[in-house]
Length: 254
Ligand SMILES: C[S@@+](CC[C@H](N)C(=O)[O-])C[C@H]1O[C@@H](n2cnc3c(N)ncnc32)[C@H](O)[C@@H]1O
Image 1 (cartoon, rainbow, N blue to C red):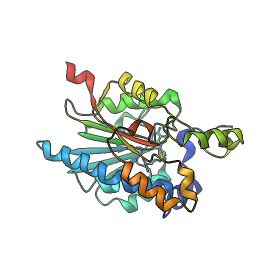
Image 2: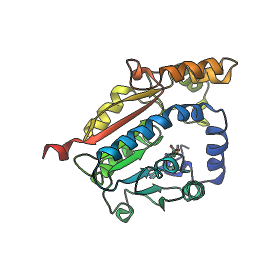
Image 3: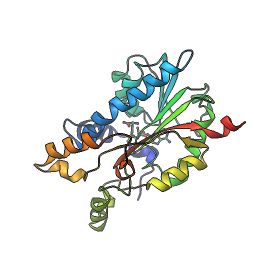
């Protein structure tokens, strides 16, 4: 039986694995985060510098507060929302200023009562059920301030990247039963975002080399090459992990 994504991180064991294994010291995910974090900080700092008035931020599906604990220091007010109480319990320890809430934004409108200047959404779109992707994006668009607000969306499994062969191999070996082996192409992600009412302002790519290299003695060389290749460049469409700042296109046209 396939577990609903909303339930995937409810149990303490899944939370512990996310913190200790997925984001354990030296893991592939934490190396990608090391590359992504300064880029994300710069996006938000530049936004704040250009914005008149206080900046209000929402981290949607904030999980254990990995992203929120960084961004809350850059803005006037920060909120985090997630469907897992146990993920948020970890975020409460990491985040100093953010207001954290638990629930489902699709069925509990009281969770998103305000408008936000910046909304971040990391490591959510790829694995959530396809039928929920557009519904969540449209909900976030409703609370993104126009015309200048930014939605910062991350997709951490590009099917056009060198992660793809490993996914095919693991699927062939029946790995789907124990792991989430989803992929989203650059084209499908762009279509989803545009059809949900957003314009893609920019695109950054992180991780060109196969993640499996990071589990070999070549990991230091792979990390150095991925560091050199990260960012907004010609090969970003082939990166494993993609970050896109978006703005609300419908509101801008009115
Ligand atoms: C892979 S974690 C990512 C957490 C965090 N954004 C990060 O990048 O570290 C995915 C998160 O999405 C949350 N989630 C899943 N379905 C959700 C929903 N319908 N509404 C809000 N959060 C949800 C999970 O509880 C989990 O914390």
